[in-house]
Length: 210
Image 1 (cartoon, rainbow, N blue to C red):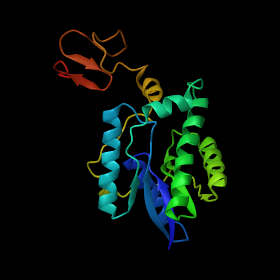
Image 2: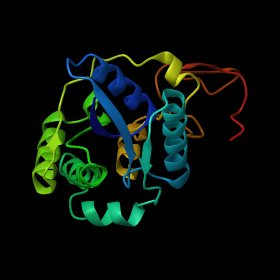
Image 3: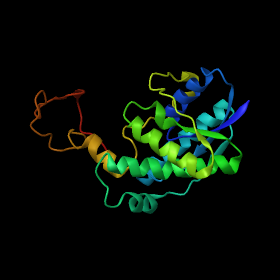
């Protein structure tokens, strides 16, 4: 089997990618790679890394991980390009560059990323960043559209599943137009603030403790 370095952004996307790899006519031997300076804040970063480590242990796969919390590195990389899609292009280039370098150093002729499983990412930008990084390091970027792939639930059971892409900008984009953790509850249709409050996601019978 040919070794393939798999850049992993989170456990759930990694599960989908492993399913996709199994459908290929060529048998690949995955080496999982973690290096994601775009994930913030620190506790979120630790949650996702922990979930990836747990999945890798369940699947019996090797893991190469740079566990440096790269907040400053990411901010410098996207400075002046904070709005999407420019920010995303800078982020993809940063991470694909790290993955291509790791693939070459690990003796992997080819690498890919779990980003290709996401329905929320720009696949054109991902592919362009991966191919540019591959050319710079003398390796090959393996692209497949695996957005429809379904992960093996035995690998993912009880593992943390994030609610936004990773960076502080994407967290803002995800929650800015919601009422999450707002108090008093704003004047939004279907929300009552007297008695048993009814919110858009169900009935709230007590104040949230945290």
